[in-house]
Each structure stands twice: as C-alpha cells, then as structure tokens.
Image (cartoon, rainbow, N blue to C red; front, side):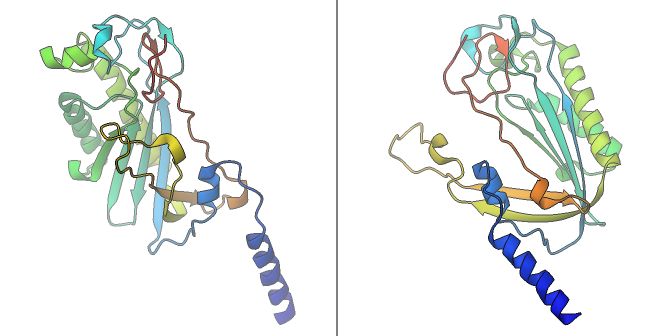
Length: 245
C-alpha cells in the first residue's frame, strides 16, 4: 500500500515536472498558479452579447462626429463573475464598452443591487475600453461629443443584458479551486508610455484563476482576444491602436 502510494506520488511528480508545452503566454502563467486559495470559494460566470443595432453611433473617437455605425466587425460581450466565501459576495462585470458613463453606471448598480441584495461597493463595473463600442449611452452635450446622440433604448438594452448575465452567474455558482499570481512581462511589447516613449511602464498582469472541482486542469485553457486596430465606422471589440476603416 505504501509502495503504491509512493508510486502514485512519483507519477504525479513526473507529470507536474513535464507538463505539455503551453500554447500561449497566458497558459504558461496559468500552469504556475497553485489552485489552493486560503479559503473555500464558490464562483459563477456568464457571458452575454451586448452588440447594439447597426446604425448606433460608436464611442471614443470624436472625429466620427456621431455618425452612425455601418456594420459589425466583431460582436460585443459582457461577462459577469460572482465570487463568495459563504459570508461575503462580490459581483464583477466586464463589458466591451469605452467606459460606463456615470448615469449608466448608477442605473446598472441600482438594478444589480436590488437583484443581489448587495451594497454597491460589492459590485465592480469595468470595461475593455474599446473605442468602437456602443455610443449613444449618455445624455448631455459633453457626453454626446464622445458618444454621439443619446438613445435611451440603447442604454436600457445593454443594462438589461448585463443584468441578465449577473442573474445567470448567480444561478451557476459552484465550489471552485482557485489561486492568484502576478505574471512578469506577459504583455511583452504591448505596453508603452505614450507621454514619454522611454519612460516607465507596468508590464505585469495579476490573474485570478478559478476552476470547478470537476474540471481537469490539464484540459483547461484560456485564449486572449487578439488586439487589432479599432474600426472607424464598424462595431468592434478590439483595443484602440491605429484607426482602420
């Protein structure tokens, strides 16, 4: 029995020492994460599409002057993550938008808070800062310079979809293994100091990985979205680098 256990441990050590070669820098870093968080957690995730109708103005490039979008280069999504240690719970939302304007953020926080019974400080709203995402999402002269003419139906549609994603994430909560790591240099040449070309940069990325108890770690992977030039007139989730038609 002892020999068998030793043999099993040796086999585990062998496979841990010789993992399959990672396909991406993200997977390489993920292999370094020990999924042994200090407290038990449950997690739930959900992803929904939030692409607005073609013709909706785009946000983040004032030279468009509020002109309508002409098509969809790739869809926009919102992702919701719910984490709980059994006593406290937090909701994290990431959306393919330029930003959450304050009026929109307040409306979304109110709706999620009512649904989850969580205080607003337990709800984190973030965006990918795409410059080709939905415009028309905030009223007022200054907002409309960046977002185009306000359309309340666009705001309500996005808020409704994100709210639905949070509900789905809440329903899908399950016990997970989890861990964190800060990866050095994952972003490689993608970080730069725009004000001082030779100035300091921060190439580090902090990652939190959570897996269901039934998941096989060797079979899991994650793929980062490729960064491409943002589109002038088409809806696009990519990061802003160089304008493209």
